[in-house]
Amino acid sequence: MSAPARQNAPVGRAVVWIHGDSLSPTDPALEAVPDAPALFVFDRPFLAKTEVAFPRLAFMYQGVRDIAAARSVEIVVGGIGEELAAFAQRHAATELHVTRNFTPQWEETLQDFERRNPNVEVLVYEPDRLTSYDGPVKRFFGFWKKVEAEVLGGNALYAPQRGQGRR
Image (cartoon, rainbow, N blue to C red; front, side, top):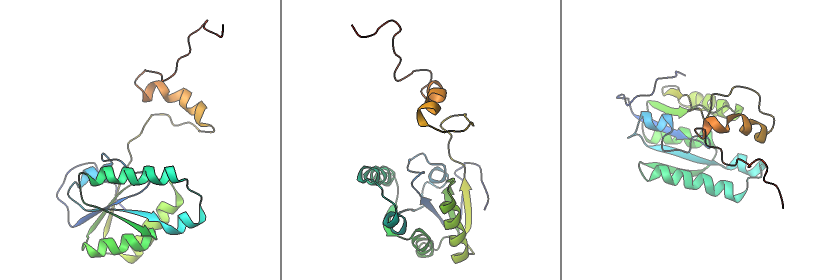
C-alpha cells in the first residue's frame, strides 16, 4: 500500500471505498479522484453481531447521500471484502483509493481485498486531523476540554460566567 499526496492526478481505472470514518465530501480519497465511482457497504456481518442504534445508521446513510449528490456512489449491504472486490471487478479497476481507518477490521478488509484483487493497487490517504492533540483519550469530556479552543478556533461552545450562580 502506498500513501500518495493529495492531488487530482490522472489515474488508471480508479474506484473509491467510503467507510464509516470517511463520510465527508472532502474525504482525502474522494478528493484525489473526483470522477471515480465510490462504494459504501453497510457491513451485514458486523451489524449482525453489534448493536448499532438506528440514528447512527441514519447518520451514515445521510453522509453517503451527501457524497452521492456530487458523484457516483453505490450503497450496498453485505460483507465488505466481497462487495469491495466485486465493485472493483465490475469497474475493471486498477486502483482502489481509501482513507486510512485505525481499526483492525480495516486492515483485515484491505488484506482480503488485496488477496482477491492482486492486480489492483491500493492507495491509502491519511485522514484530515481534527486537532493536533496526540495524548491519550480516556474520557471524551476531558479530551474536549483540551482541544475545544483549537477545534472551534478559540470560540468555546459553553463558557460559564464567573459569579453567576443560582439566585
